[in-house]
Image 1 (cartoon, rainbow, N blue to C red):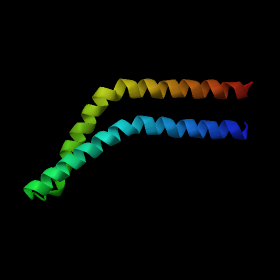
Image 2 (image 1 turned 30 degrees about the vertical axis):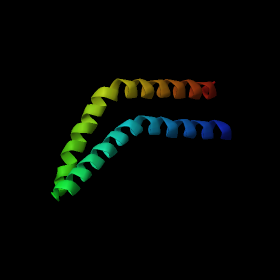
Image 3 (image 1 turned 180 degrees about the vertical axis):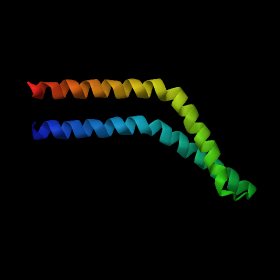
Image 4 (image 1 turned 90 degrees about the vertical axis):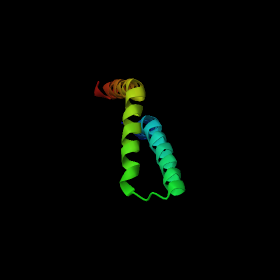
Length: 89
């Protein structure tokens, strides 16, 4: 295996992870920001109030983006095995 192959595979892995986790992290960030603004305006300082909306939002995000995430992960895995198969011969 060449150095370029390893670096390319690592770069592709990192980009795949970022593209898969990005939408769910963005949803969680936006919901957390909205809950924080709500807590600041109403002066409700309950620390557990932020967890339930985030969990529900991430679950909905998984329902919405799950098929795309799975397709992306399967395509990455098939591509990785195809590239590794070249070195097996």
